Amino acid sequence: MQAKYETTVINLMQALPFINAVVVIEGNADIVYSTASWDIKKDVASVISNWLSKNAESIIINDIIYTIRLCTSERLVATSMSGEGHIVGAKDQKRIIIAQLAQDGIIGFAYIEMARALILLSANKVYQEQKAIKIKETQLPSKKQQDFNNEKIAVPFTARLMAYYRALEYKRDSPLIVDPYAERLAGDMTSYLKEHIRYSEMDYPIVRSYYIEENLLTPWCNKHPRSQIVLLGSGLDSRAYRFTPLQINTHTIFEVDFPSIIRYKEELLHSEEPLCGLIRLSADLSNPDWMPQLKKSGFSSNIPTFWVLEGLVYYMDREVVASLLAKAAEISAKSSQIFVDILQYSRWLSDSSSLNGIMAGPFSTHFKWGLDIKDVPSFFSSAGWKVSCSFADLHDQGRDVGQKGMIFIYGVRAYLGD
Image (tube, rainbow, N blue to C red; front, top):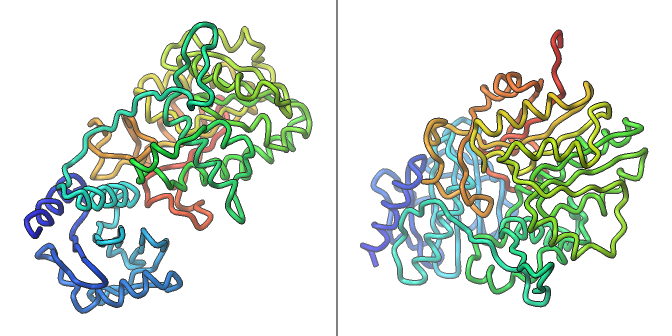
């Protein structure tokens, strides 16, 4: 077993080079493997005790104080306020892995891979670096399998997964997002998630949706007597049916996504009444032909538009995104606005290289590119948008969204002289 632990840790640190040190623990505090650079024997019992208590504010390792940011039965995240990096812990019934990350290490990636390492160890297997996860499209839930227009409809797994997260959120005591349609849209994913438990919890899409709705779309709907809201890559979004600020003034939502998703939603929600005007457009956003289709479907360049590119652009080539943003700006009224989220790259994620080698969690079939946060304004300015940006974890609402892994971008249509 010692050799298996050593190989697992070596492979984990090779896969994620921002991990500086790792210990593997069995039982309550029995260290069975540790990297040579990290001796935490004197601290491990206290760290685990504070973790299990779930109410401690900090942990101390090698005389460094780490403030606890997240503490659940399976996950621990703590950060040194003096710039000494982060502590990430993953736990199952038999083992614990604790890692020390560099200051600009990507917490979300680390936890997901550490949890996967535990799963493999429990199965008596050695962790290996996992290349890009390619999640195949899954068919409709069995109770909803039907032949629409003599054609089987396949819905991307990630679209259903986002709905699944909203369904879980809806059942919480104090949900950030209230979506009574999410469970219906997600379908039954129980059997899949039992086999892929690392997908069973993810706060980032919930925090992102909350930020968009609470900080951006609510004041937008209140301010504009008439507006358009374009959801590019809309997936199984249900805002047209549940987001009550849409009832204030007059608004039209345009949902743009692949034909399979559009047909799936129309089938499942055909008996529901939207809160505002709703137009669905089947299109491949990587093909510029969708823009004329949008205009033909009723989009007006004279009406203020809010563009929402939520969980979209890092799946597309950078050049395609730049062109899409420029064309959106070109057809937008002057007071139009935009939201985009994008991957932050650091010294661990180079802008010029593929991101396929780093497992980015259930969002990622193929993260293709990212931007350093300092380069975001110039990139968007060149496409016609004046934006501000901030790391997602600054808006976390007490949830776990990772550290400097994702960036929220908000902006307005830019004109000469702005």
